[in-house]
Length: 495
Image (cartoon, rainbow, N blue to C red; front, side, top):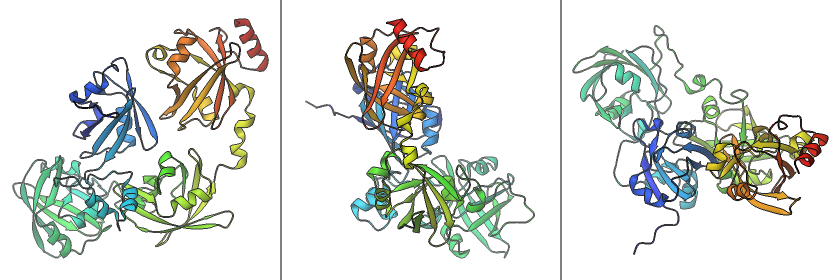
């Protein structure tokens, strides 16, 4: 007799059209019996949470946001682990079959010298062309494209062509030879082939690359001279002044703006994985703007107290990480989940220097202790979803005022008048925060119905969060300004 797993999992590869939705496998539905009433699923990945609508066991509304924020690409593999109550922990693997977020962790645990070695160790059986972009694509016209040599172009014997260029020139799903000539009247015969919905230039790519001494970061431009059974292209290794590009080809120029301030500043939030693992993932725009993509180098971080730390920047897949030394930096700055950090680039080069500004000063940390009265009391209206599902959304202003966004903690709700209390959980879904895991018991105990207005008072906020339940108030009164006199009248009038 087979014992069902406590936390069953299913695997889903990313195919064409994945942004429109994702179907839960039929064979997995046996583990979801009793969850038919749930209209939404909760997806968690790397400390973030998304609320996704379920329609006929298909993930729809909210899925597109999940796919975009996790930068899902064709060829990626997703592993969904069911935690219960339609909550799934999602692990994302790229087409080399390495976990995008934890490659650095695996590297440290296994004692490998580099990320590539890690990927080989944890590689799945079956070789396929790894997913990688052709570089920075610039659609000057249908007869030109520009790109930058990426690491995969060196380690593998092919170049991946931009989709738009391939489709506009009729080479999608076409297998044929291509002749490439340069300004020195040299020529090479290569091969075009389509794999995994992308067109590759192979069958001679290595010889072409070596003959032109192409290395990571080098610029390339291809011009279509003739299409047909055997296309002819012209190769340039420097920009053509006669061709006006719609986009710069070099990484530093291409992404002029990268963060909330400029390319020299970035503001970050400490996520749960930053506390569990010895690395921090930098925003992609900031990394590109400062030339950190595919760059492995040392990093010096200094603060206003004249302290300094030696860390290491590493690249894996599409991510750039502060790796070695992160744990020490985090510990010495007493960084906790939800804390904000700001880094300022002092100098770039072989070993960049950044300045660290802690935005969580003692003044900021103590702000919640003296909240205005209006912010310590708030009203929620019972909507239909509160009765169907086991959660209640918290007003956005309250969530931000008490720094509940991206916070995962227990919550005690007290009813002092009737000497009752409930243990529930606070959870984040994107920018929203809700009461979950105990909401149904609270709702039923207070006989809450659609349209009811209920008032809460924040008693304490921190590791042990406590709220006071002040009961129901009139729907006519819930829009009135909340002050001490008003609250007394509303609560006394109701009870």
